[in-house]
Length: 300
Image (cartoon, rainbow, N blue to C red; front, side, top):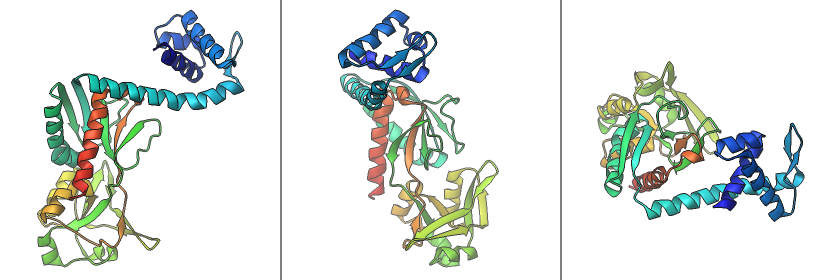
């Protein structure tokens, strides 16, 4: 698609500030890249760049065109991926990273189901509560809960309505009583998660426009989210976990939600990639599949 390539050359030239660098990146000759820009300018009947021997900058018309060009290119790439995924069986290795408890208890059986639908897919799965660096680590995509801190990454929504939930086992509540408000947690054993040396023991709640932050203490601490969940199931204390991680336990009655008249912290689920170019047909289908499973689980 020559027209699509011409748009790609235009955007890349803006980003790099160099026509020759764009040509090298796309394995084109400088003359071919220059011809593509000339074709665009002729079709638009407007100059896109002011050129000199040492610099290249956008004209006012070029700035206007760029603002429309970027989203148009993204939409065209999405359409290409969608058509490609519908035409052929997706296959290949997907290198994925996920938090320990979400990965073991939910993602693993869902990947098995996805693999039955797409037998040409294989996985290399990294389960860890350490935040995976999708730029330097050997992964294609990472499932993360919480707002991505790095805006340079591509964060695709999987389950945005997920929140944390305060909960404990029936055995613990029978032995120690049920806290009716977040303030009452001061008299209970609170089980906390840690990442590196940081303990996540500041639990936040909202009601009627009021924010309440409680310092959780008195219980065990682990650097593995699934261990914290297992301690709660064993009646060792109260946890403040992603609802996705404990949804099955809540539905089965193994855990009981507490202080449900208070709003809890948001914990949206994303699939994080280095950029849109890494969004292969397999990853696109997987994100949609996992999103559907998360939505169905949240309704139970």
